[in-house]
Amino acid sequence: AAGGGAGGKVWRVGGGPGDPGLLTDKAARLLARAGLVLHDHLVGPGVMALVPPQARRICVGKRDRRHTLPQEQINALLVQLAASGQDVVRLKGGDPYVFGRGGEEALALAQAGIPFEVVPGITSAQGMSAYAGIPLSHRQHASSIVFATGHCKDGGEAPDWAALARPRQTVVFYMGLGALATICRQLAAHGLPGETPAAVVERATTPHQRVVAGTLRTLPLLAAAQQVAAPALVVVGEVVTLSEDLGWFARAGNRVAA
Ligand code: SAH
Image (cartoon, rainbow, N blue to C red; front, side):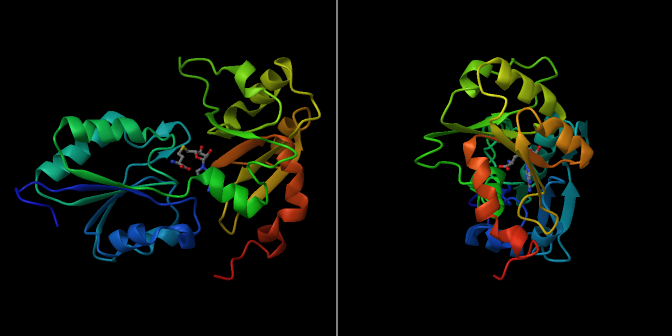
């Protein structure tokens, strides 16, 4: 399928949050004809089942902070595979350009002159929102939405807590579980009431989805008591209270009809 020369091409494909029904049609078609798939561990079995059995699969994903392959090596591997003439589907959890170092990877391809396409995916915050019944915006509760990284260690820049603690805002933290206590404490220290609703949603859109809801004050203990594990999102804002009425997926026993 690569045009012109002997080199291959890379399709950077969003695999969505878990439920294979949430793949785009384009992603599903690319997976069904793939010969070589490089995927993260975040991509679940339902999505991987769409890859032909004879296709080669390479898991380069990260589990927590123990990287299976450092990002630089993933970049080098992608470049090398494509340069050797192979077409590669690079399958990412969620959307390829929402966290997970997707932009760096694409730049490595661009710099190496490797042709690539990007297929967007439903990012986990959107899947979580729909399946946990937590609208990201709501006329009464939130007029802006922030996706933030909660991974505030490893010498990275400190989050702008004052901006994250603004009222009438929904904040979704990716990779936030390890820093949950810090997140709740800092948001309260920067002005959000301790009673602000907050939740962690584990393995959103999958049969294992769990929603643990509380407040900035109570959530860290609740999540620890229930042994919430990654992958999980942390959601902060008044919209969290809607989950009780809108959580259709839990009420259906974490099953989808279609
Ligand atoms: N590109 C991905 C995000 C990669 S960063 C996306 O668009 O969703 C990895 C983080 O995504 C995890 O630490 C977790 O916070 C979140 N995540 C991914 N899939 C998830 C899921 N099914 N349920 C809850 N969180 C998820």
